[in-house]
Amino acid sequence: MERTFIMVKPDGVQRNIVGDVVTRFEKKGFQLVGAKLMNVSEDLAKEHYKEHKEKPFFGELVDFITSSPVFAMVWEGENAVTVARKMLGKTNPAEAEVGTIRGDYGLQVAKNVVHGSDSNESATREISLFFNESELVNYTKLINDWVYE
Ligand code: DAT
Ligand code: MG
Image (cartoon, rainbow, N blue to C red):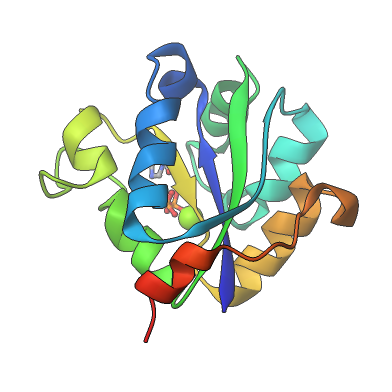
């Protein structure tokens, strides 16, 4: 089983999209491992987005993600990273397919509602940036017998 880091960004929290994002991941069959509403510090924002350090939009990105609370989550399941990225849709909501989270809820790239890890390495890094081990919960859901062979 894989784990991925999913975050409803400030625009999604302010626009009351948290519940829908959680519902989509639950209904898909993924299992919630951890979740919290939190403010992102400037240090955390810069570390999380460090791959974009040289991009012209880096400052705007850090300002945005620190501007208002985010809802951070860890979801577990088969191929969680790849499947979650499909559920999010393309980075630019204007290009994202209808039916994806970004395709259904966004119009501009800078306000694209959600973040999702882009690889297993990113997932491991991002989960440990945002969560302590004690905040990640291991438990069995009997419903998984109806999700997996
Ligand atoms: P993703 O979030 O799909 O992994 P990314 O890692 O390329 O996309 O970029 C991180 C975030 O930066 C993205 O969710 C929104 C913002 N962003 C990307 N390209 C941008 C651009 N051209 N102008 C403004 N913000 C941008
Ligand atoms: Mg990315």
